[in-house]
Length: 178
Image (cartoon, rainbow, N blue to C red; front, side, top):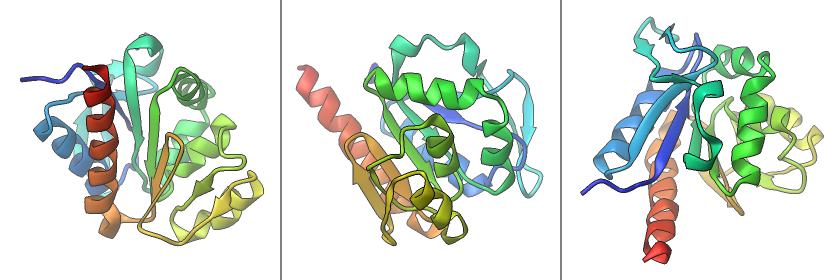
């Protein structure tokens, strides 16, 4: 039986394939509705050339229907995404509307650009640690850090813990609806 939660997985060119596909597959296996979204509805290419066709442009998604937003890393994809002000704005609106925001590797750059990092405990790929701290967050070097509805991880090695944490929170939300 399908859960009603809509999980948005953001993408742009240069996305890290494991950090995108692993959560997409895990969320689908758990029965969640996964929507692959980018700035535009089109074909995006990963770091290693693996393509993904998005289901939607972020501007076409009803923010009220979003339960979680997952932001994969790769250096280029999050940097490309934050250049479109609509992406960080979408993440901020989703967060303010009660959605879970989960980011791995360089994905937390979007949380920083969305202006929702201040006073949160977060982790990331080590090279953006200073960006996280300068945004007012408290950096922790752990596989997964969860603060309120923000879940962050460091790299592909952390994917099992990252996805398990997201799923546990989603399951908790679903059980509280009953």
